[in-house]
Image (cartoon, rainbow, N blue to C red; front, side, top):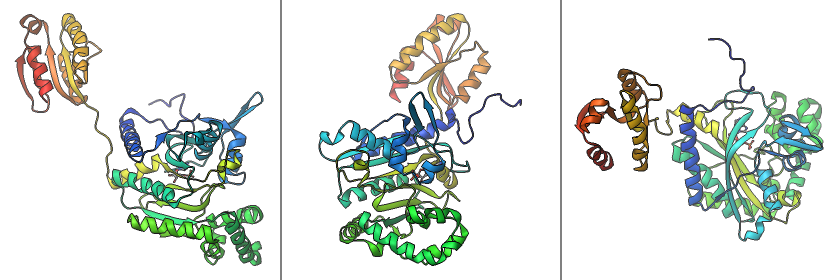
Amino acid sequence: MAQPKYTTHLGMVDILPDDVRKWQYLENLIREEAEKFNFEEIRTPIMEQTELIVRGVGQLTDIVSKEIFSFSRGEDNYVLRPELTAPVVRSFVEHHLEQRGGSQKLYYIGPMFRAERPQKGRQRQFHQFGLEVLGSDDPVADVEIIAFMVHIYKKVGITNTSLKLNSIGDPESRDAYKQALKDHLKPNYEKLSDVSKKRFEKNPLRILDSKEEEDQQFIESAPVITEYLNESSLSHYEKVKEYLNDLEIPFEEDPHLVRGMDYYTKTAFELISPDLGAQDALAGGGRYDLLVEEIGGPKTPAVGFAAGMERLFIACEELGIELGTKKSVDVYIVTLGDAARKWGLNHLPKLRAQGLSATMDYKGRSMKSQMKDADRENSRYAIIVGDHELESGKFTFRDMKESEEEALSMDEIFKHLLAK
Ligand code: AMP
């Protein structure tokens, strides 16, 4: 086949009709389950102001420093959203959502953009679903968020996961820890990787996230943040663990889990799957008690998570889980001749009005080709119509699954179809 002239950009993929079925299945599941948890959907634009993402996600994060898709038009700077927590917070502040009263419990589903090096499970346009609770500092909110995340994977049948949990404390705890970490790393500063050297002054916590070989021994021997938590951070963390235990949601504490955005405080978590290979994070999140104020809103503690939808599908493939139903149609009208085609076209709406899905040939093909097509379309029934049937008022009604047919009037056919 000739090479196509136009293709998608690197790391961006078309989701073709056969695949869309599993996407629709997952999207419906997320919506249904989110409603059960009493969350409401929020939809924000694909593009945001650069400044929002830089401030919200953090100047020194990989996302902002290396992966942002940005452009300008006139005076305005735009970025394609790399994540949705900062945009949701922007929307919360812009529209004073706190005035609706109570905690705002929001969910989203949609595409995100990061200019990463594409590989399995890592795309430049990918999709996330996520939940955010704005306006609660209660560990109950953290645990509801985690419970929802775990629940969705269970629902689709991905049970082989592990939940990593940490607390990165409030700013006071974190400052104490940062100092301890720097004191630990300082004697070996020269042996650290270049990336970690860069992070040493401005963002030492991120060194814990380093994948560089030369950093590993210093990370392993580093002090752990949970020993530096002040009373309020520690009691919050203890409650989160207690409530997770109550709900029998297993977790592993990982004191080196820091996550990729600067806005996190206290609780941080990630859901990992051993079925994913190198990109093993299915989902992640945490608390961000200071972000709303940072973006110009009122003091509003918050917590949320985001999950990668492509990675969920990869895990399903690895586990042999098929999501969504196969394409099918209730009735295929097979027509022979012009009068029958006209009859068919007029009867499609009548079938559809009864809640049935119905189709016919659009190409004037032979009966044999139409029967083949009905098979390919996975049709449950076929109604075969020619001049003879139109005259007699009896149509061949074929059960495609049982390979049985009988001559019936349309009244009888409708009775039959609606009895199913
Ligand atoms: P993050 O927003 O970085 O916390 O990521 C949350 C989840 O989104 C990850 O656990 C992945 O499942 C997914 N994800 C993040 N970046 C990508 C990407 N470039 N391609 C595909 N999925 C991604």
